Amino acid sequence: MTEAAPHVPVLLQPILDAVAPLSGTWIDGTMGAGGYSRALLEAGASHLIGLDRDPLAHDMAAAWGAPYGDRLQTVKTVFSRMDEVATGVDGVVLDLGVSSMQLDRADRGFSFLRDGPLDMRMGDDGLTAADIVNDAPEGMLADILHRYGEERAARRIARAIIRTRTETPFVSTLQLAETVAANLPRPKPGQSHPATRSFQAIRIAVNDEFGELAEGLQAAERALAPGGWLAVVTFHSVEDRAVKRFLAARSDAGGGGSRHLPERAARAPAFEVVGKAIGPTEAEVAANPRARSARLRVARRTDAPAGTVTRRELGLPEAVISKGMS
Ligand SMILES: C[S@@+](CC[C@H](N)C(=O)[O-])C[C@H]1O[C@@H](n2cnc3c(N)ncnc32)[C@H](O)[C@@H]1O
Image 1 (cartoon, helix red, strand yellow):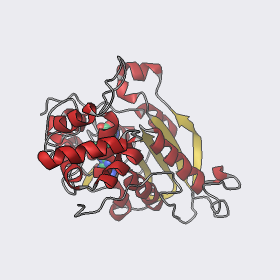
Image 2 (tube, rainbow, N blue to C red):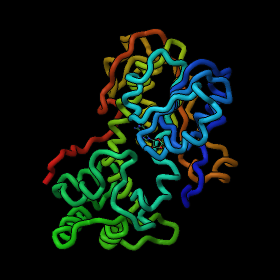
Image 3 (cartoon, helix red, strand yellow):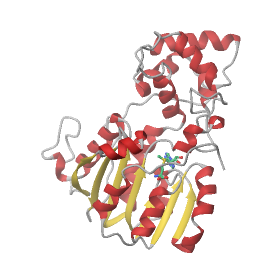
Image 4 (tube, rainbow, N blue to C red):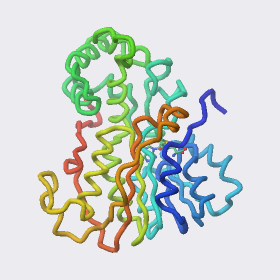
């Protein structure tokens, strides 16, 4: 179907081990190529609700899902809205970020190595990367690069983008990658491509990934039945820290509260944390280098009422992006 290699599910076996024996209705909030969804159905879930914002994931599910009949339901939506699709579920899994198919397909515009339209949307609506790069004021661009990409040269790169776009608007990934690279030192052997941090930052902005994570964790809390499982796989330390803080805030693990979460401990815990964060084995990293930075955290829902946490409490930075930017 595509030139892309199939997506290899990451940390799948540790999830299955943690939640065994598996039963009932599960939500896979990031269906992708269906690696988790299929495994959950095979391991004993009676029903699986697969969510994904990307139409490609749904095209793929139409092919792999047929044998499961009405045990599989798919909905094209964002996972921050999962509790509008179902509540009282027995488990929720989230596997954050982009899939290999999305990264590898030049026409999706995620890659600084393959030329494609400057898009970067996981779904099919909202602002594209080109909208942001061509329209955002310099300060907003610098904020995005700094807060979402931890790019130290954010101001220099933002200035260079503004200079370039007044001559020629950005339309392609390589055009942006070249502008970024031209304003950073040449990488030493073994260092990542100079545009890595800027592309990550713009992708996070385009897809509101940090907003989705903060809202998605709370939506999972509302969607889960007492005793239901939450399993979240992250690939960036900022996201893993947010999941850790969320679970600390919503469980007993916060103890007497903390500097970040002072008033939380007084409430009845909505989750029990199960074990510590789990990373990949050496064998998994050797077989699938994408697994290198993956972290799994698992928790179990109690019968306490669902609550709220703020993005700030989770330590997720925010760069304000508004329509009609310039
Ligand atoms: C890492 S892949 C998941 C791969 C999947 N676990 C598998 O084994 O095939 C992440 C998927 O989640 C989707 N996604 C990311 N953020 C989302 C969100 N906020 N709402 C819905 N889908 C999202 C992406 O479009 C992508 O298809």
